[in-house]
Amino acid sequence: FFFQAEDGIRDTSVTGVQTCALPISGSGAQWMREGIRVFWRQPIALTGLFFMFLGLMTLISVLPVIGGALALVLFPTGSLGLMVATREAVQGRFPRPKLLLIGWLGTAAVRRQMLGLGVAYALGFVAILGVSMLADGGEFARLYLLGGKLDADTIELPGFQSAVWTALLLYLPLSALFWHAPALVYWHGVPAVKSLFFSLTACVANWKALTVYMLSWTALYAGVGLALMVAGSLVGGSEGVGMAVVPIMLMFTAMFFCSVYFTYRDSFEPAGSGPDPL
Image 1 (tube, rainbow, N blue to C red):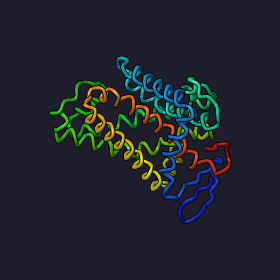
Image 2: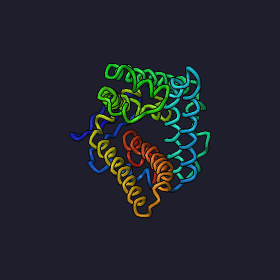
Image 3: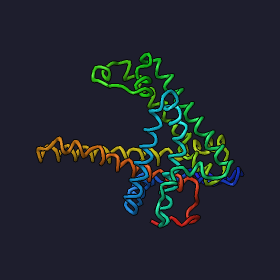
């Protein structure tokens, strides 16, 4: 297990996994650029897979009683499928729809570990919603889990805003735990609990690059949204532009999921270890 930080390289043997934490400040923006670039190699296939992923999560979440929890359990597997699809595109292969279920198509050991990750993710997410209930009595959690109309009066409530910010802040460590974990289980055969530890370690080591990465995506989303608003005001067709906002933003979200693969690749696969030319 090689861990490269800003102060050099340390060597501690753990299951043969290699973590190369990048100290390069510009790597975060590079991850975004690589995600966008590989998306345009297979735009139809990758967009289709992302919409299938989104549709599957939506359909599962509307199931009575267990839908919301089941969607959370399956989320790590779906995100892994998008990473595998991105790697296929990087290596010049066509991403197939069955890749979304790749976590369940492997060995029994991989399926058990992916199920463990899914259950842990669902429990962690529900725990976050539970903590957010202390701020607003459960209104935000109810809307998230059961759906409903979100009106301006509700959004302006101080308690509701506190609940949203509480959930967002608590989701950061949960996201770090699961950011690389599905890929470590699938590609390295790391047990679920260890994969969470390695994922968190890599995210902490790479916090500067990941911050640049997230800020780059935030700036891109804001720029695209602003451009659409300006376009709507210039052409006087705000309704038409409004209809275009959702598919355009979903396309950029597909690009974002493509870029997640590169954060894993540069954190756990040493340069030159795999055929990922871009």
